[in-house]
Figure 1 (tube, rainbow, N blue to C red):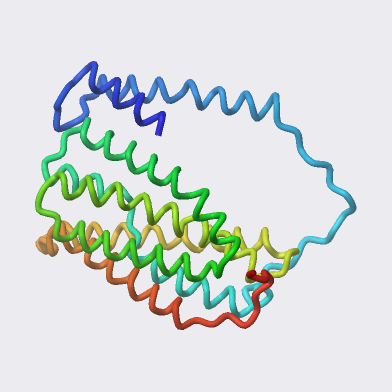
Figure 2: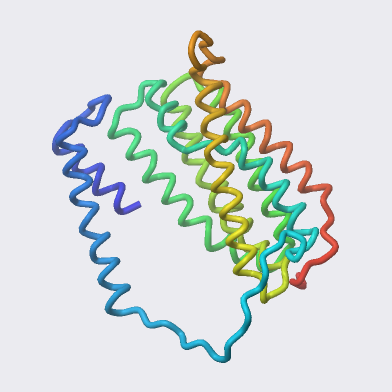
Length: 258
């Protein structure tokens, strides 16, 4: 949020109310972003210390079967959701298409991060006390409804309000979905499970954004279905995934809720 506010200040000083970011402003923002990046690397190199490994263990052999059926089913459902979860760049394009200026977009992104920050910790504490599945379902329903809202947005302020509400989805479900992985697999396979989770989602991110682009603008002579189409697609898949998650009853849960 603070980084975006700095970028917002730069844009305000150099090009107020512009609809597009000019090259000089972009270069200055990138150069400024290198400062915290370098400081982060230095703090890691100088200040961080590894925890010594006690005992030597054999590396587990990777196999989907070893991660268990609950994890595999969970990944199928998450994969359905992620296939409609295209890059957030499409949300920015939607804001531009509805007439929002560069400063307006940056302010919108800052507000999103503020909401995400405020919601994440309380949602995490709640997910440690109740069934994580309920939190995820709630987050996906929120996501689906917000994406449907993006599809029918008529004005720039509609997109702004929806994007701020989008922060509630991130705060509710984004971290909780990852936390649930630890409940589904044995402790010695958690690293493997998280790697598998991120690997599968990384693979799905490309077709998700490709589909969104094709739905929006088409390809070749086909003009696509217009700006609303990718959001209808994403919102629909999110609601389908929420329904599947609601009916899914994992038999192996390593965490006791209570």
